[in-house]
Picture 1: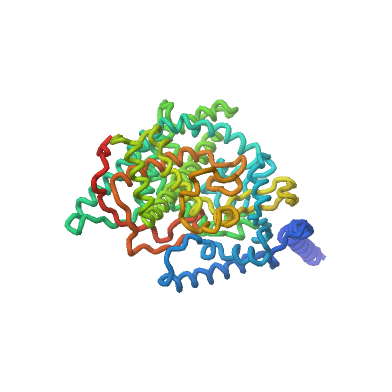
Picture 2: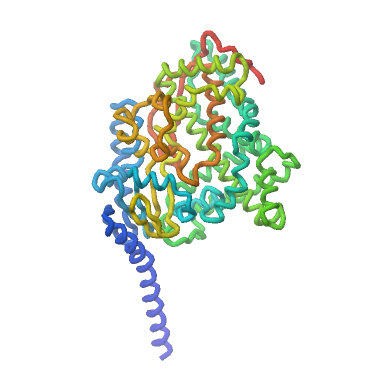
Length: 523
């Protein structure tokens, strides 16, 4: 009897677990898909239990093979969607500008329809939060910081952090940005002097140097830390980015991220080391009121946390430091690299911007006032962000039922707006939408729903003024000293690693500008 009772309990438990998994993995997401289908929103048919994941992998593998076969036969094509997002392109052709698909038990609404994107861009409701997809696997990198939080937690963090990136604060940071940019330019000048016997040309892969510049800017302007310690943090965050960018579908479907897999152990190790380094910088920052760390400490102490040194305050500081490091370091560095690539491909715009820099700076280092005069440089950066936006998608999640463009989006649905598709839409940008033409930004600002390099709606990037100033400073100083040309060894292959970046780096050939622009060698 006892054996029979035990077997009965096991059977009941197994059946209950099976029913629960069936509900979580199929019935619940199918209700969301059905609600969208009733409104005419179609999409590829999912399979149990992984949704459309297999089809996505197959499309990605085929696209990679096709890109490798065609690499030697084609020139540089700025439309990277067929190579990076082949499944989206396939489904968009089959189902139109709005469709649903699934990854495991997570339902996505992929939207490039103008009216829906417009409503999302104008929405300031907390009913729209950050997409929860990849939140589990991304947790070591972002924690509960501002980039991944939602609702009141996000609103609270934004109120604390936003004032530190207002234009008046950015204005005081430009001189420090110029110090960092000058160090980069002088290192390239020294390398070029060593190459004179080879024809006064310097060929190099610029990516790591640009990242070092961006890291130095963050260290100097935001944290007041030594570059040596900042460099350690940035290197670890870069490694953490590579680790967490690998999809772990089981963890995302179940929420279980505690399994001691090799990638999890590496992510935990890096998370622990980064936390220790950031808190070391906090302890060393003293009473300097000019850096962001101390500003966040003061905000934490005044926002209801018992002490700026409490565990809750430390979590707030560490998570948001990692968020700022990632957003302000990686995204800006990649954008600068894309910008130099495009200027190397278009020497006519390079000459125009160089002349503008000379006129605006008049032999001095760039400052906030001279940056305001660099309209052509601004246009070049804007066009770079249109063709190669750092954020490949604007991602949101409906925390409650919400209506966008006349479509009722059920709570729980992840909304993905493909930024590259919006930025390359001929109806929004004209028949030359896939071509580099900064002149399109000369006359008028684009409509908010047509241009999304810094996100959309209430969650528009806090640091966009900071990022634009940082990009202008380094590009102005580089163009003042060097003529940029693309290396014959450059291989164009945009790749998605949380952000879209050059898979093999950007290789340029640098030559001294003649006559040399009258910029001071040191600041």
